[in-house]
Length: 332
Image (tube, rainbow, N blue to C red; front, side):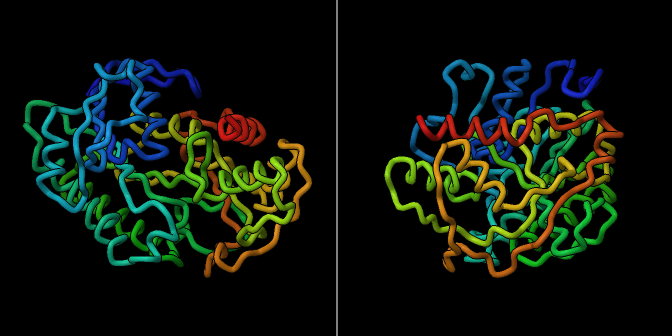
């Protein structure tokens, strides 16, 4: 595999690679594909099959990005996506929200846990013996920690999932690390904490705040429906998270799990008020039962010391900058 040397946090110098990104058309996947192309890499973008033209794919990327249809429930689809020789795989494809997983827990397990096992077994089966095995970054979630004390979580804390989504992500981690132990495939697990940024769908908490507060600014009702605003979250910018993923492809140790976190907590109520202040509106949030999660984790903040020691990574974008960029993007 080509060598990537991290000279300092955010200062990467690495040889060209071919990287398979599953779920490349998703929120994080689009940011990751853009970063890889900007840095001169070739990307196999494995996406849900569609007959619509990929509006997210920049016209200038066409020579660097190969689109392939991809379904985690279809073994032939997985093998086709991996058929081109690759140096690394970043596995993002998943049932990606707590709400969606709760609607069909069985599907969440089939896609997230069984799908990850199927993908990694296919990577193992397609090694040619002539080239180093590709590095595989399996993206999990900090949701696997569940409820705990109001202190930053570390990787040695036992998973205690309290949603179908989080449980299926624990299953994906178990599947990934089993393949590493059995086959010595260089698999690394990432546990990102809550992240947001420009381009995230309104179904997620921060873009939903922006959307509803923009409506207030346009003359709508000052009373804004929200879910529970008491939970405290470690809120990152998706662009910093993508940087961490790339750092882990080189600096992460196979068989290890790494938190991606800012290490600071902020309540969702404070996030709401910050967005309102950026938009210059006075709004009154109220709890809407339809938006409240049955098992909210009260406090979910991470300790990313292990990642920092391994790669030098640290977040570079402030929450204020992230919120400002999201407001600007959604207002136009």
